[in-house]
Length: 332
Image (cartoon, rainbow, N blue to C red; front, side, top):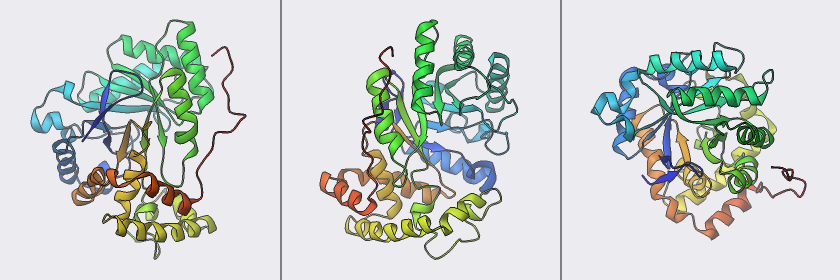
């Protein structure tokens, strides 16, 4: 598994990481979770993404982390966590940030995380205060870097500008949803931020919460994510007119995947990795075999040539273009 720099920082992350949203502590047992984490580590993955709200606030169990399985060096892993949205504290200010992150570290039995993400901007707290809170936890040794998640470009730019103005620590990356049906932010906006201020991109949901896997072609299986409580929005999306159009596009992509001798999920993940501004793609899985299949997308990446990428764009018909009106102000 190839490592890439996270933005313009010196932090090296595997080009695919293991995400723990939904499945860990929810859909799968602790034994299966440990098996998948072991598989990920042995496949060269060093990035493990957690959050204070995954599994109803109990985080990923410490036993899932490779350092507890292999007794490997902590420095060989990149462990991230997300704070704020959906968590115990409703605002990102200094005291709540410190308490939230300390609680996560206690659950993970870690002294620090490599990256702490502000999961959505806090609409009731000035961005300057969020930047100061992140700087505080980094200076206290609780995290090495901080990043944003679900922030728009202007909010990220403001955080960077505030950090530079007040001698604080700026974010190094944004964690964003990216897949064949959602492209503009990662393909248009984040590259501009990378060139301007060095912001990297960690992307999640390369299979659009499983929609691109093809499992919903004949309806919604009872064991699928769309059938879980709290995911009614996903079921409605699949059954919508746009959802039916996406399914027709997936049939064409399935034919292309067969030509390339790979599965549709492998094609979708390799397509995400082809974007050189994506530092790491977070993978999710409910079975070790499924995770292994997804990791093998790395073998498909060389097959996504310029002509194949153009063929995919012709099928998707949604390639974003830089809008003339999308500009940062000169003072930035």
